[in-house]
Image (cartoon, rainbow, N blue to C red; front, top):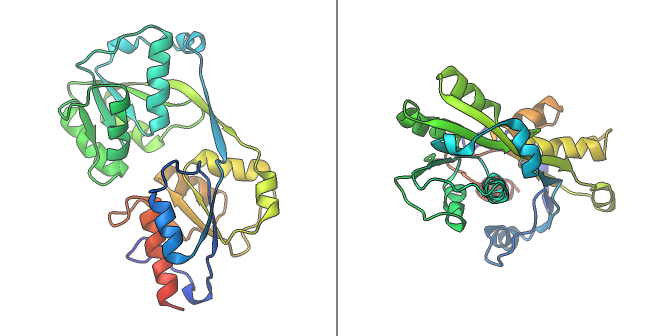
Length: 266
């Protein structure tokens, strides 16, 4: 791996013009993705490889979790926040104002403003968007908190779960939604992409659900998150970008560094 976080590759032989982002298209015209597109004259397509289905309150009750018994909630995505407050509303649960929230990134933390009065002493997040920095935050509070980790029924962050177990934290997994593969066969067959960027292990699974005999054939692959990296490597994919890194906290930042390297070597 190079010091900028992109894997070593023959950059002189690479030409990246068409990139598939396996997420919804940003709603804001000011999205950094569009700035990136202009900077490198890219064709960016956005197609979610997964869709999320909320677990209904009646099914959540089967988990026998009393949300009000927990003093802290862990969120690793804005989707988790949406479904947490949806379930609370469906079950007519009032979340205590003293509840603390631990978020994987500042962006996820700021999203809480949609649902609560944002107080810095009640909302915490890692300094550089990595699990390691989140664990440093956990360490300061673990003795006094009872954690509820809101996650997908078929996808949890094993690093977080293992850390909580190893450090003997009191915690429970709360399954409030599930990931389902989208049908993207037509998208993948209609156009050749020079690069695909993935953000979840479920996105990797969706690729092979849609194209069981997928061959990379020199296509560049970018991944975001340690679990996504693990899933991609286990699937046998060669990775060109692994984010986040200290100097590239987002996929856009990682793409900027990677594409700048290609341009420089042409």
